[in-house]
Amino acid sequence: MNNFQIDILIFIIALLSTIFFTVTIKRILIQANITDKPIVTEHSHKAGTPTMGGLAIILGILLTSSIYFTNRYLMILAIIMATAGIMGLLDDLLGLKTKEIQKKVRNIYSAPIEMGRLILKPGEEARVATEKAKKDLVKYLAEKKVEIVGEAPIKSEVKESEKIIAQIIISLFLLGSGAVSSAVLGIDIGYFLIPVVIFGIVGAINAVNLIDGMDGLAAGILAIASSACAIFAFSINNIDGALPFIALAGVSFGFLALNRYPASIFMGDTGSFALGAGYITAAFLGNILYFALIALAIPIVSVIVSLLHRAHIINLPVEPLHHTLNYKGLSEKKIVLLYWGITLIICILALYFYHAFII
Image (cartoon, rainbow, N blue to C red; front, side, top):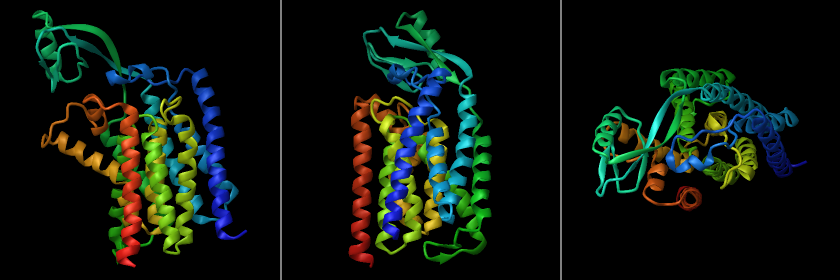
């Protein structure tokens, strides 16, 4: 078989195997009652949807790499994704334990009221999360301006510092492979490759993890971005660099078959960690980091916006940005299509401008 036929075969295997594993994993998760308990009020209708579906993504990439085990890049990709997925799985397992129960309240006053960092209009509901919101609740209950309409279980989770340590360990697997070139963006950076790879792995995992908050959002963006990166690699005759992205596109589209709106399974941190680490790994292996970062613009911008919010430079009513858009009235389906569309446009423009003005 020629290279093109091999690439098509790899995509088909990754796609079909991930669909099969997603269906299988979904059935097992439902039987084990491993389901999501949304803390965002607007997503309460999703309670009971199985999570940790990222296991199907890991199995899909492992099967694909085992069939074409002679390709070093594909094997490294599978190892990194499996390692990252296991780290995410531990976080998902801890998330099955409830840390606290937060109150859900409705504004029954005739005017808007300030609840924590939110402004609740008459009839609007919100979750009482911050310490300020809890103090406001006591006051408004006494003044009979709000009523408690429900409760939201808050999951336990791994500390941020522990997550970062785990993500640094994942980057050491990639550095240990010896497959990453020290020439980044056309410049030989020598030992500075170590912090670059660490920053890349940590950044990509958190970017994909943050964007994973609506049905099909993360999987769709990764499917589009990975496909664009594969096309870009082909266009510059980087055949080996295209293959990991082809496999990534296959597992992303495969998972999307059941994860698109309305999703019947969520990937959880298991999937977002695996996809984030896998995507940046493919970028390093193929030495097309510059294009891969452009293709992943939406998750990167979302991280920047969230960091600005946490630094109190800007103020979001709900974090991250896609939840703010939902809070402001834009439907989840429209937000997902908007993010997919912007990602697709960015990728097309990046391909066009590179070949029109750089080559």
